[in-house]
Image (cartoon, rainbow, N blue to C red; front, side, top):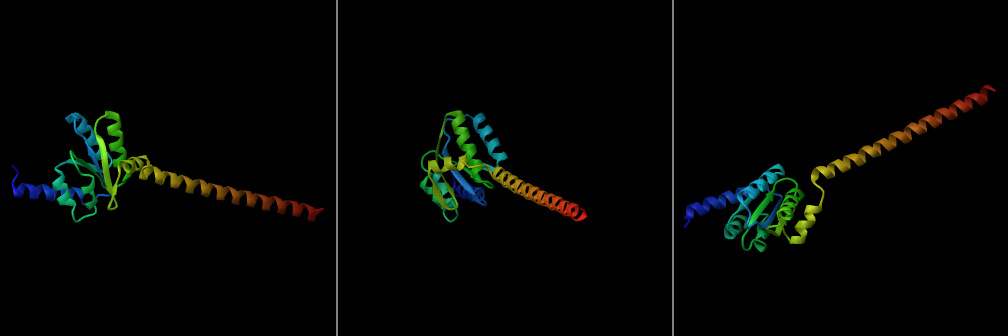
Length: 173
């Protein structure tokens, strides 16, 4: 049986785990092999996210004063918590794809900006484009807008030059 000191250390680790997190996804990943969970962890590492399996009571204690306080509404039964530290859509996408690919486990919900997310909310978050895709799309839009403006200015200057040439021809005749 864990000692109070051990539990205090686990709670402190969990507080650090949740610190600076943008989103928390709660899932039941029961029945996975060590190899599958290792692969899942690697996927999350590439998305600046981390995963922990721990007791719900310790998660609730670690989050009672923070932005993830609402996690107590979804952390019931076997619980795995994924915290994303950058883009909220990436960890949600990773969890949804992992569960879909392995056909095991289930999403229970999540927390984003202090609000509890339902299973549907988490799946909707997973459907959003990533931060990089959004930035790329914005940059593409800005680039095409600048090109259109440059094209319009070029054609305007060309039209003015042609008009000036026509006026010069008429004045010479």
